[in-house]
Figure 1: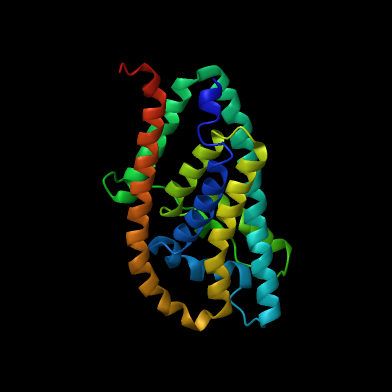
Figure 2: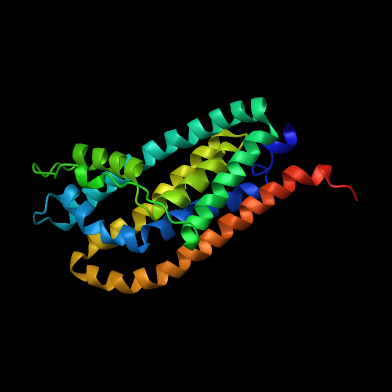
Length: 234
């Protein structure tokens, strides 16, 4: 049992997992479909009105904070429930995780094609130009709704968080993912007039998504190997 629990939570792998989580958030945030809805998200947060730099910074900060809080809670839930399922299912649970990660990787590679719903368009606009509460709530909705591009990466990170035997590690993984996603929001917020230049990033990010998909497939193969390696006869 300890073999499965420590698969991705050893002291050596923890910094790598944290770095991957942050970079995963950055890659997800600059993906083509994520960039496409950024103007819409900015409208929800800012209310499509003129804002000074200070107000914009406050609103975007609380948007990212709302996302970070809910992601941190998700990280804790992943760690707690993951340990329960590992203790009950053992290798079977690991097989499910590995298969799920592989499906997400194949989705990013474009080998599998299935729809991931987006519900962000259903969020009402910030008519009152709230500085704190509304951006915070939108951040929560944004983190839960996701986008077709970011969901596979997020789902994979949640799967790895479920394998962690330390709640703090799982919490930090999802927290750093949310911070990575928030970077592009801050950049756009600092210069809304330059949003058209994001089209160049979108072209490059398509390759990053495919590279991320390849990494997820490799990670799933690694999990499969760790599960079956004790049964391989030399």
